[in-house]
Length: 255
Image (tube, rainbow, N blue to C red):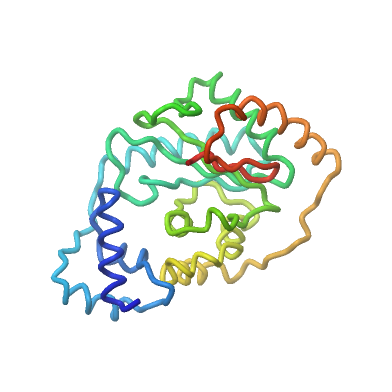
C-alpha cells in the first residue's frame, strides 16, 4: 500500500467512528504494515489538502477520563490481583460522544481472572458504580469491562487479530500498570504491525526495558479456584453468548 493510500484509509477509518485527526494522531494511527516517519506522512497530508484539526481541550473527553481515573483509584486500593487497567474504545481514541460509555480492559495475575471479575461485580454493585449490563445498550458514562486477560495469556487470539483491535491496542490509555504489564502486553501482540506498523513501532520503543518472561508463577490452588469460579459464571452467561470469546484466561465481551 502506498503512503497516500494509507493516509486516505486512516482518515476514512477515523471518520467512520466520528473522528477528525490531528497530525500527531494521523501519524500514530496510520493504517499500513510498513512504518513511516512524520515527514513522509506530512507530505501526503499536504497533497490531499486534508485539514488536520488542532489539538485542544475536549470537555467530554476530559470528563470521561476523570471518571475513569476515579474508578481506577478505587480499584487499585481494593484489588491487588489487578496488574493493569486501561481505557479503550472511543475514549481512548480521543473522540467520544456525550452519550458513550467508557470501555475498560483489565489484566490480572495468572489464574486470578474469574475470582477478580466476580469480586469486582459485587464491588461495583455495592458501591453503585454505573456499569454496562450484559446484552444491554450502552449508556452515558457507564463502565463497560469488555476485555479481560490474565498475565499468562496476553496475546490476543488469531480470530481477534484485526484492524479494530490493533488500533485499540496502540491507543489504550493506561491507568494502572504494575510489573511492566502494559509493556509486556504490547510486546506480546506484535501481530498489530500488520495493521498499524508506525504506531506499534513507536509504542514498542517505550517498552525496550521490559523483557518477556515465561516464569509466571502457576499456583495449583489458584488454578483450581479460577476453574471453579469460572464455570458458574460461564453457565450463567452461556445462553446469551453470541460472538463473545470466553475462556479460563481471556474474556472478550464485545461482539
